[in-house]
Length: 164
Image (cartoon, rainbow, N blue to C red; front, top):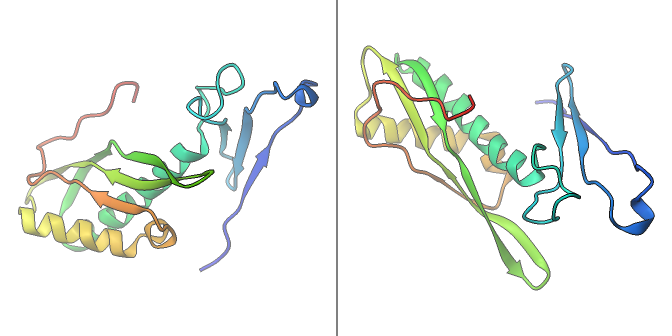
């Protein structure tokens, strides 16, 4: 299906030899998108992390969420549903998996979806999420548990999170 790439760029500000250097960097993608990246402040303390940057853990969780959403939208459209909005407050859990190693062991997707016209019943909604998970390239690439906690009934209108 093709190759995908990203360019990660970091530049020393002169403080690298001291070990007190910034982990802020850029993630550049085809098409021209540039995203500010950093280590997580949960892993590397401020001021060496940039809390405004996307950390690798957040990027992984966002990738799993976006992939699931894209498959869900495709499947819902094929099923004759009209999705008007989709909002997922996804969350990842990092845990120690063995001595000296940590991993994102669980990703929880919490999609809230609004429909126009016919709304799926709980069984159809569950089946759509199950199939989206089965087809998601990112979910198929990860060994972490991915859980979808979709509402039993789709709300009339999904709300955007603050700042969106």
